[in-house]
Image 1 (cartoon, one colour):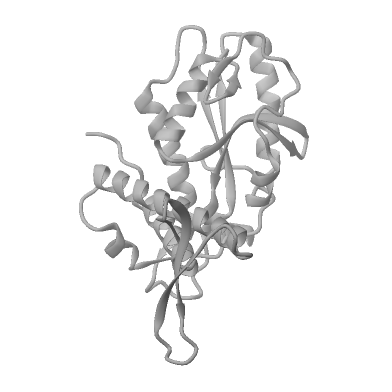
Image 2: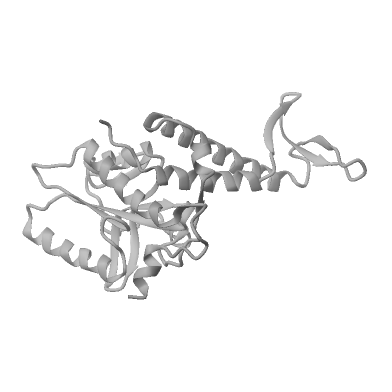
Length: 272
């Protein structure tokens, strides 16, 4: 049986995308007289009726409304991809299922969207002698391009070789993964030389740094093991990433009939 991503992941992302689409005016790119225009509806102040309006690049509102239209198109594409993925992995209506759930407010964390926006690809200062290219990004190994392709296939935004300032010093994470519906990032490390003792020692320190900074292994940060003879296969990688994003999703996706005083697991453990 093919491994499936947890339902909570789909539900959480569906709610997130729908809420944002509902808040953005229905502005679309159309064409008129061989010219690209923006089309939207406005309410007539006298009659209250909605009337269609078109504006061109000459309109002073063009730049602002064009950005809104692009953002809306991006959200619609994400929603389309999400629904297609859902139908590949599950039966039934994701819309109907999601209507029974809600998202809890994201908890405060320094590993959030603000951090994500501040990170760039290839922040590590160490030069890569023989890089492998993936969509213009220089990577240290061919296997990392495989990981990147799986993240793309799962429609997870990622950045490669990013700088993280943790409690015990700076590390460079192989991949940062953004989950905007929960206002947080996750991280993925590929340990590809576990047959090398010095490499193991270096990464023990890195592992300790993640844990001491409050990141949970297999929830906030995922380690994929490997050496010169072994690499995790496609299914294993996808299963581990799915388990990671599922663990995060289950923190925040709850049924609507859950009491308002519902306390997430991370809040319960803080008081212990």
